[in-house]
Image 1 (cartoon, helix red, strand yellow):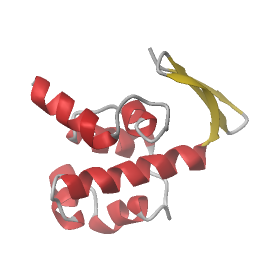
Image 2 (cartoon, rainbow, N blue to C red):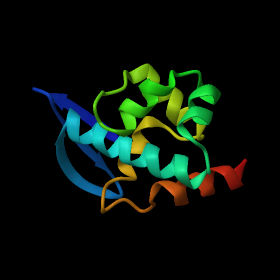
Image 3 (cartoon, rainbow, N blue to C red):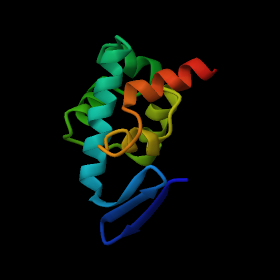
Length: 113
């Protein structure tokens, strides 16, 4: 089980696979952006193609990957769900102590369907 604790713009993440770690929101969405970029490239999708598939403007999606804007929670859920993952998984896959990287988890989920 993943636990997120939020206090004063800091988020503590703890689960059975990670040690407790504190991040600020910017750091978490930077991880999300890195994983979004990596998974999009892995799936051989252009920004334009993915933007159309998930109904998010191309420039908006680009700004998430470039870390110039933080997606709303609804946008993060929409992006994650397209790949069959949760927002938490998108973020946890950026932690060194997590069991999977984003492409491994994506393949695992894809193959279990």
